[in-house]
Image (cartoon, rainbow, N blue to C red; front, side, top):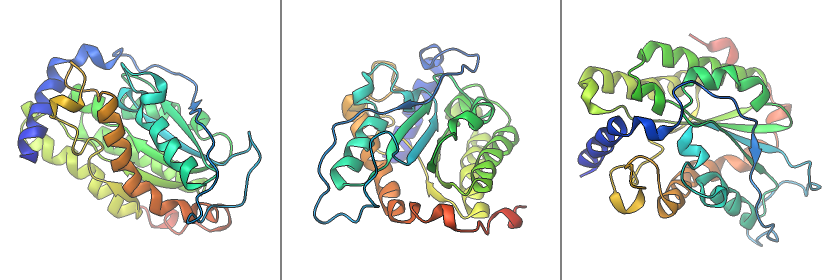
Length: 252
């Protein structure tokens, strides 16, 4: 069933290229997600209370899936993640550094300003548009590697969210594409979320009419999925600035 859903999603991905945003990689400023502040939960273990406007950041570097194309900003999955963070009492601010139509190359070009400020964690959610265009897998790997290595240089933790390529490019391409995320996470000791749209891709009830972009219910499902990988990292983020990165010297 999962394979069938991925296949259906891949077909929709190809048929709906125009719906994904402009082909040229655009540049937009990162947008903090506004959310209602909720008193810390009694069972949470948050960092020290942080004044408004000085919250440490979690940046999500992504494309139209992260931007919430077709949805109000408050219904996109980054906003849903912010709600979870606030309810749990963590002081982090989610920043959506998402540009519709962006590829891994575009993400790399705008990385420096996306990482401005007190960034503790970078969620890398790119690759969908590389797949749409059938770009060389090696090119995507180099771009993603450069992104996570720059984060490591800045002692910023990374959560890598994988994507899937449409099946029409053939099994060799789709397999190589998938392995980029697995291999990069393994070589850099990163937390990996194998497929950003797990449980959403190929499910009509969770997607908009284009079959690619999650609707409000789908975005909530994506947020719940990302939260399973993000929540365990939150307790470690306060110490990242004081730790020496051991991954930098071990790069292949």
